[in-house]
Image (cartoon, rainbow, N blue to C red; front, top):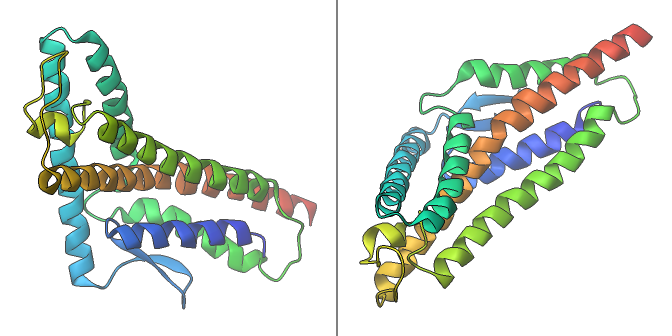
Length: 227
């Protein structure tokens, strides 16, 4: 099929988001379409997670404001870059209320696949680029999350992570306070979880709606012209 690579990545991406319980959609294998999940608990839980992401962003901005107010330029620059990425990914991510208009764009591409599914074409240009983008996105997602987790482990007062908000950290420089694993480990898990969720949801829009779907439309037009 023309969009085997697209379908494979789309299914895997939704599978990851469903595992994280932060996505209100699922892939219907019968219709081969993305639909709003019929599971009420899953749908409501994804709304809760999305709301908590805004709380997480509030904590991050609060830490950033505190270090900036105390003229901690280095810490403010470090935390500011991370907050900008988090904010950008959240702006790209799917809204609390299922954005059916955005998802319908992806479903339109899947509908086109049915029209061209019985024709044996070589792998399209978009498939090749998408496979490269698949690998790059997966690396960026996990590398960003692991780097941030490592940063929080090495320095549990590093902005803008939860440790810098909840622990009695020095304003700019100085020894970090002692930590209790019972409270510190859950903060690390929360940091890692929210960043992974935000990154994966954020990449869903530019990968599947902007890049893959529009690119595939161009491929289909080129195929029609050659017929």
